[in-house]
Length: 453
Image (cartoon, rainbow, N blue to C red; front, side):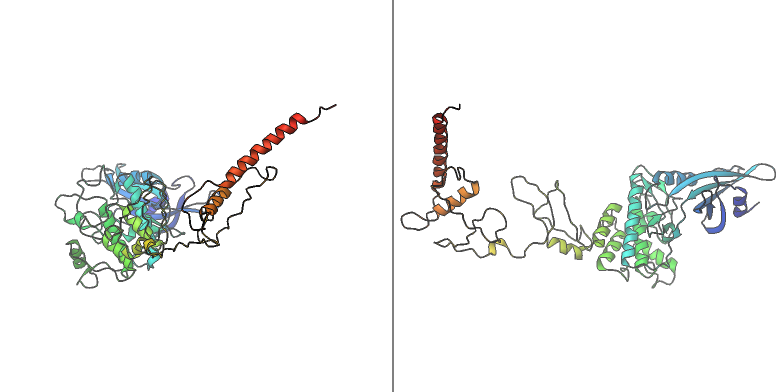
């Protein structure tokens, strides 16, 4: 029988104008990956080709396994997500023996070629956060289609030239109707699998198992490439066994306090403490990547005036303090809701501000300016002549009426002491009289005018 690489050459063209470039990329338990190329358009295009070989069983039949068909179905379903390896096409080739009987089937899956991520890669904190965010986006997209990956590990994560991380290899992924069903136990890579997948007697686990595995991936990159207990146990197997038993393990050596908090919550053995959905984990990573500051502009939202951000709600408690110091209190207005904007406020309470002493005689720059900032210089009330003629002015503005009332009301005409009353403004009466007088004069002049010749 020919080798996989020899068969690959015999299949050319694989798709129209696509051939094997001669570069072997890697292999798994049931598959091999090669680089393929096309130069039909005058430039070179490359892609990755995954070949899954299905051999004849003991009964003499060649049956394509369910997981191989599932992988193609899942890749088609999730195609288009920027954080999942892009699927191009698939086909199959049948292989016959010397008796012209079907011996094997090669399943060919064409997808984008990417650089694999390995445990040896050194990532700084911002890169670890980006890795977590990209993978959370992939898990959110998968969850929307009822898919659990079940084998998240560095070897199944890839990165493109722009630095975007993408999740691949859905060979043992599961399409489910909900995320709390009974699924296959002892599946996935032991070093990164969640305890409930290996230890549960009921076989019940869900999407949080993927979150746990992602947490371990981030842990390794924040812990100098080492899994929990790897530096203290006598062997890697012992370290894995201890972790799967539920033994608490220390935080990773590197990273900020908030990053460590997110990682440890994702890796919690207690399902009640672990993130229940990748969106929750993504929110915390987003908050961390923005320095703990988040501008909220939601015209439809209301905020409880007594609500606090606690460690239980946000593992990034250190940064949350910055937000709580500038927390928004809900308005006590009759509407009950309004625009919520987080902003810095003064630390002094309004009731502690010194009260101004009311002077018996108003200051020249008193705060009776109309609208605007009270800290701005006040506008002096404009003097209004009650005897102003109609030809010059017949109507007063609202501002001038207000200023006149204020000016008049500040003193009693008798003794000049503060009045406290708001007498009717004389300028208004004067304006009304002037307007009536003007109308009368206009009417008189009309009737007394000589007839035109």
